[in-house]
Length: 64
Length: 467
View 1 (cartoon, rainbow over the protein chains, first blue to last red):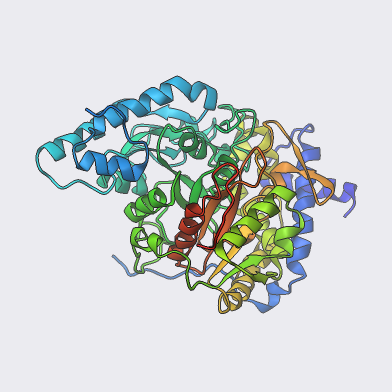
View 2 (tube, rainbow over the protein chains, first blue to last red):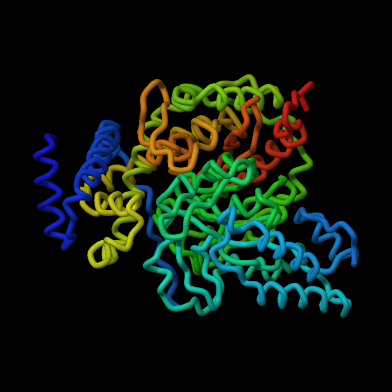
């Protein structure tokens, strides 16, 4: 993803979520989004998303 | 009463039980140490002076009345300021939550400490909302490493480590989502225990990332660590994650040593970016234990990446309203990461949660061959306060993002870990992780006790024999 594409993504997602990002903060936010992208690339390459069950297990409790 | 007061938890509880010291004089001595040096160390954000004296006097009255005392009778302690303390706002390291109404009651583990006779001295500094490996805090100042006050304590349980390493209290409670007990324990030369995920109830603690949050103790000895853990253990349904299973006492186990255990040293990912001191500390520990096995844990980098995504997404979702309405009131070092985390696609988060199960299976296979794995706790010793980058593997990288590279893959699947301090010739100590299969905290502390007995934390100590 290019710098411009990351910037557009941040602008669109932040607007949808109602988050106002000060222009001074945005380069740092973009850096963290890019770090997360690189992490996601590693995780996606494991194939876990389509071959493994999710770790959280919800166990309904008895009614009180 | 006594001329020289004991300072360890085990020694204090014994002295109080035997009438060699009163809980009140122990508490007053601890408060005097805090009054003398807390401004320099930055460990405490809130002192519960009156409560401490009242709890100490209650212990002394119980003894005078011939009543049975708890296992932590008269032991001073303090908690990371994300634990609820009745009458005090739960800061969680933040300016925003510091303005919340005071907590109506204590966190469950604070209640258990009180029931065991321990004496609460206050709440401890931490990185904002626990999203931190440094111990720095823009609102309350940094916790400073008592071994060298120009250096970081590590975080996010920085005050919890500083209070114990400075000798303010013998034990403290912290939390660990990605390494927040193990990193500060390593930097400050302490023992820490991150129990199995779901072992200790987190009720009454300010959350960070539900999928990965753990709570646990710090101490200056393995015996004290076990003593506190034994008082904390036990299922409680108020935390849905807390497992309803037997919770064995650890104190009797620590004398068993490591004989008969199959111990392996983690290689590959867990050595690649460690500095020479970290590798020397790991090698000293392996030599002292006679550990010759080596294991290259597959996909550790992917595990660390998945832990990063889960933390970023869950933590940001937790704070979304604060990010929307009060972003300028955050510590700038956490704010931008929380904002970024709020924007991530859900598919990344779900993939990370699914990989968690896959990685659990990888470790389950390894634990069929080994009982315990040794790994570094951090790639370096404590950095200077204010330092922003690290040089690891010949590359300059952001410090905050990289100090947890060895701890994150382990807590990702909730394995129990003891952090053990080791010296390796450098000015500052290192820490290693003693990692066991789920629910086997006893193995962690047996090995930790063997390393303690080998004297690897003593300056210039050289182990002469396998113990």
